[in-house]
Image (cartoon, rainbow, N blue to C red; front, side):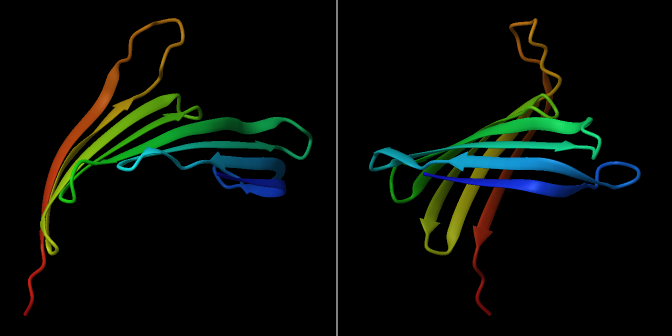
Length: 141
């Protein structure tokens, strides 16, 4: 487990005219291993920045969880879920890898993005999705 905190003056670079404001950043994380083959890594990040007169520039948080499961020495599954309060978006990214030998790995995965979540509705609307495959082989010359 761990955490990190910073408080002070930061530059707001996301504005048309950058501003030196006052803000704070906080991050906390943990690594949980309930079983030999399962690792869960939750993470929370919070950030805020105000103009020198106290008005808010931005404030929000990101919740992220990474889950790894090693089925066998060759077969591995990773799942990343993330909620971004700044963009009100939710992402899901599964990845499955199979290691044929020390130099050859096959990956298959996807990314699913849900934006503009409405707290008044109970369903999620998917805004983008990608599927990918990768075959990695070391060639010696």
